[in-house]
Image (cartoon, rainbow, N blue to C red; front, side, top):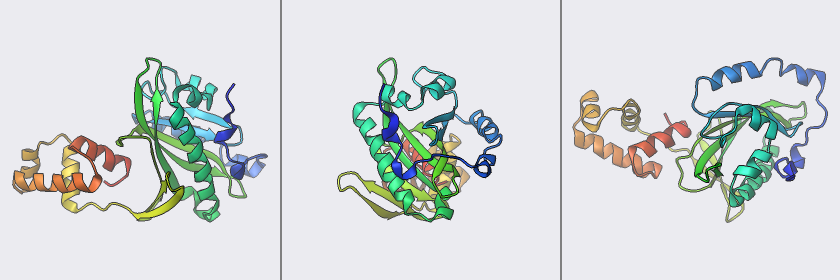
Length: 252
């Protein structure tokens, strides 16, 4: 059996849960299960005391042929089985640097931070997909350790694994981890113009360039101009990638 302890930092060791802490979780899975029925993304709930999953939603794309219940039972062994070796090492690194980062955050702010990263899954047919996982604390212990966290899994809009980022709700700043230099660096969050947001919003609804131009009372060439600026700003090649990036990073 693989050693799953590498996924669980000693900095976030959760041993005993008090009665008061336990009360936080009464029926908490029900709204999460309801949410999972309304989204195509996969939802995981991690329990850092049990070192496993409380819940995994059913999703054939991200579960490599297993049901949510089967992955819940497998726990972190699922990653050892289906994450490619290079990216398994990456996930262990994410765990290490992520908890080191959280240790430096004031306890009262820890629930407002989300860590995002990309890695490859190789399914039972040998097909590899790049997925994005965003992890946010759900419940903390009285001393500020992350007890339970929710993970949202979606297809990544990036070209390779890594892309470790931490952002805080309501803060216009992103912390990006430099894997080569082994350090965090701060960046400003990408800001879209109102025209760029309009182009994205209509594109999500399936509008063509000409239809967007008519809807916002500009010429098709003007729409093309704003699309080109948008692609350059997001570092993408087409409108599908732009929509995926903006959605995953909550830019619209």
